Length: 167
Figure 1: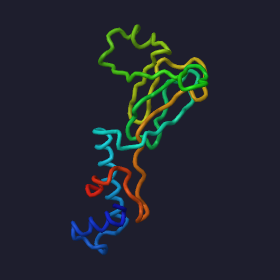
Figure 2: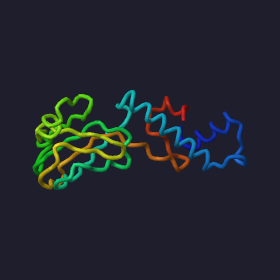
Figure 3: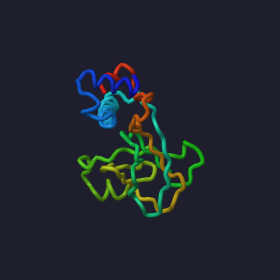
Figure 4: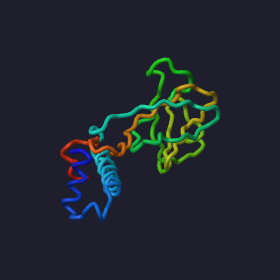
């Protein structure tokens, strides 16, 4: 079902004419609905969505980084504390859970580069240990991207067809 079909479905179900609510207002509401549906589907079954991968540089003495702007759900972080030459040079970072920390000195400050941690907070993430050298392409994030807004009448949602009528 494309944006035109979704718009017509909204108008038919609500009985609201285009003289009362503009097409652009309907499109905004449809896109908001699509984002909410995609978020729910991603939390239930990630396999509906294509996985994205982005590389980022590790900066000297910097642990705080920004998330990709289109990130809807982070799946995995991989870090290489020396210049990577292949995918095997990266170590999968564990997600940090402060409720599982009992000895701050031992568990937070003495983290090995072979077992890195990542702590997500809003639109940022913090890696541990903090890099002591700059590393080009030292990090990778695997994630599910937020669906692009439908703007053309022929655009279709990125999730499976059986969920299109929910938008």
